[in-house]
Length: 564
Ligand code: FAD
Image (cartoon, rainbow, N blue to C red; front, side, top):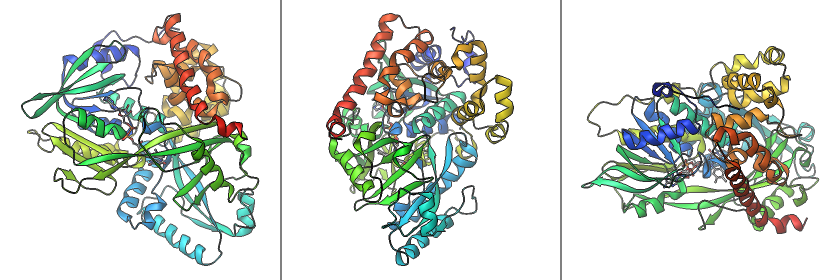
């Protein structure tokens, strides 16, 4: 296969492609140009900030030390939600803000990626609990305001609950309340926001790790960053550096010699992935536990069940699930499920680290907010941490507002509430044309639906690729939804630079395929090698790197699986 090539420098201007040529172009720009805003960190907060700034007309660069979304932003529960939990804490402002963001994403910003999802809230007590939960969900509906794409909540009697979710123990469950939230493939959504930012002129480079700051007097005027692929040190000049480093915030502040107005503590959350047959329910389920809530979340033909919430102090880059985490999830779910979940059924496990912000009370540099915190710790250097995936857009806006607050020229207001993510345009209309597109391209309606729900209107890129190389229309493996074309496209358009990037984040094979997709690593490498210009040695190294990551994850929970 031959890669698309850009000969004209300006052709990058409106391109959303992230690939090897674009990356080398980006690396050159990083050292040659001066930026209004340099964003550190390619999690959802960083890409949201980069898009916010680029769409205000600013000259923006974003550097990510590893892969886009390789931190917390690929390891969440993947829910775009108001947060029922916060209602019990009377945090109505936060719930309202999150519900507003949910509405925007489902209806206009990213309908191809963010989908409504129904949940049952099972009731153990017919009267008091129904009244209490019903009142809470009425408030949840009211806080949405007048924009209402998702249906409101509904009471379900015991008989109907048993029909919808036969796996919920009928001796314990006396009925349910059904309500809606939304679901997203987090890593994919983060990458698509990065591509949208690139489309609006942002220079995006993954594999570029910031090591130190460049100062003129007290003012931060840029950073020194390492291109982890070539080993070269790059000096990047920027009027304002915006750090969106999540759980890495404390260590970066320390190494930069900066005192921030907050600290970030880490809390680990683990999810397990099970086959569809493990739980007989047509809808998702939310369970209250003694410490928090546990979600049973439908994920295509699987279930994601989690999460845990435990303090963590280990390696930021490699959180691993432990036996106690998996035991907790199984025990809590099994209090209400019949038949019980079995460790032997587990297909995959993943762990993530929440960046929890503890504000320092003695600081006046910090603008306090219940969920996320923005901070100006030196002239020319701002940061943001905390918050949740759902409110990424507001976080991006808030941190860029602070970054430009003292700008000598007037910077326009944020427009990201009116800026759809690439692929969103025409999505609803395309979904009505599935059969026609399937016929015209000789593919099944299921394949077209799958592609529309991952690429939206960018499906045309995939169809062109298949037209050019018909062998890419074949599935990567039996019983898995991904086509070979999607693996190729991950490297040619979506910035994947390794087997791990493709298996763990561009697709979710790492937790969807048996044996953590180790058996598919070589096939993936064979497809992306020509796009990335690999020789045999590089291909082998990337395969081995993935196998090592996957084996470490499997090892950490081996005793749970062995005890099954
Ligand atoms: P990250 O995604 O961690 O991004 C930080 C990035 O900075 C990383 O990619 C890292 O590589 C990069 N970086 C670090 N150091 C450097 C450097 N020196 N140079 C360059 N780059 C650097 N929220 C919801 O709304 N809904 C949910 O269902 C939900 N579930 C969750 C479940 C769990 C288990 C967890 C842990 C979190 C959940 N969240 C949820 C919260 C949400 O996932 C996070 O708030 C969000 O992903 C944080 O994104 P971030 O960009 O701030 O951090």
